[in-house]
Amino acid sequence: MGIVLKQSFNNIITTYLGFAVGALNVLFLYPHFLVPEHYGLITFLLSASTLVWPLMGFGAPNTLIKFYTACKNTSDQHRLLTTMLVIPLLFSVLIGTLGIIFYQALLNYFETNQAVKNYIWIIFIISVAIAYFEVFFAWAKITYKSVFGNFMKEVFHRVGVTFLLIAVYFNYLDLDGFIYALTGIYILRMLVLMVYAFKLLPPKLEFRLPDNFSRVAKYSVLILIAGSISTALLDLDKVMIEHYLPIEQVSVYAIAVYIASVIAVPSRAMKQIVMPITAMFLNKKKKKELAKLYKQTSVSLLLVSGLIFTLIITNVEQLYELIPNEYQIETGIIVFLCGIKLYENLLGNCNSILFNSDYYRWVLMIGIGVVGLAIVFNIVLIPIMGIWGVAIATFSTFFAFFTVKLFLVYQKFHMHPFTQKTLPILGLITVTSLLFYFWEFNTYALLSITIKGILTTACYAFITYKMNLSEELTQLLQQRKK
Image (cartoon, rainbow, N blue to C red; front, top):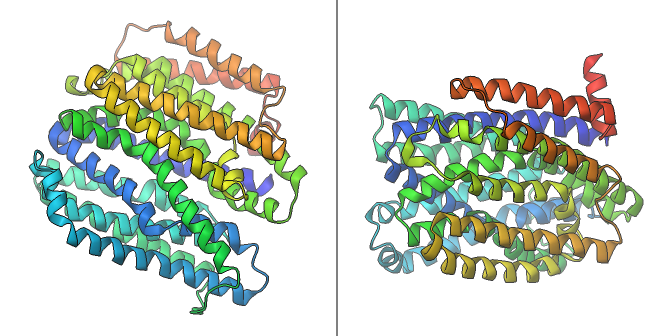
């Protein structure tokens, strides 16, 4: 766990830096510098790009990580790397051609939303940039170097957005200029990581298919669908809000989702280094090491994300006092969204195990059903309950998806993430959340958040340390003291 903890710690720092900058953008700059309609438009364009890019990448990032360590010689490795570079290009050209052919149909679909019609092509450009960025990130991760790539993924574009929003405030950019410059940031991010990845592992192009290409292709197809399913579950709600509700509601819901997504930061940070290590354990059939990693990641992620959950729930009402009234949302919706993110962290590296094993086909079949369930829930609940309907649909579908994946790993690998520390950690999260939620300070919102945040963190950290709820985190803290 040494390399996992070290890089995970660094990734958590960079990821939280990115989320801090993102919070500045999402909670303060966007709402104050853009009208809700423009904010909703930009949120929709980015969400649509997130839905489309897995089609461009065609499973290449995950495929590269799974099969690179299984290659028998350097020639096979170079052929695999070359294949992963070519695949996104081919499918980007294919999808771009289809987009041109059916362009009028796309315009007709967005007939009621002229703002979206003007920027449909932007979705394609950003999707290609994200697809190749993920390929180059995977390229870096197979060398067990994830920190810089994580910085580019989490921090770079958010800092760029901050400067763009400031430019909008001082009238240096209008809406068109902002959207075009934002697209340029995603392209630049891709190019920077390409240079870094090629420096770590210089490409040696071999335009021959790998010996195991049939397995690689089959895995890529299934990972494409499985990855599209995961992405759809993340951004389907925002796209469907645009269809059923005024577009400004997209921005209202996006703020709530962003607040909840902070809980997922530890998982995202640890995933960057845990994914290739999990693949290596599976390829070399090191079951004991894999089971140990499964439990360690679950405990560590639950403990860290539990503190974030507590800080959000106990301060969310004061946080919304800092946001314009048109972006207000009910606290119950935040609890729903945060709860499902906490459950995701409890699963540890469950996703890495499934996506790098022979049982990824099961994830595909399960995911298709879950996406269908999500679509039905959203269609039924949004017209009746509005934003509450979206939150309930999201919670229900994710809860079902995570539970089935947890059960699948248990059935196929005979391992689970739970330890004797799982229940005490859940108890700590529950007690501190209830205690500090009802403890109010009659002062300015920002000061109240600061005081309550300090007290909550101190209490949570003290109990964690005294009860030794995570041996790895305790050792890490002791090393940092030296």
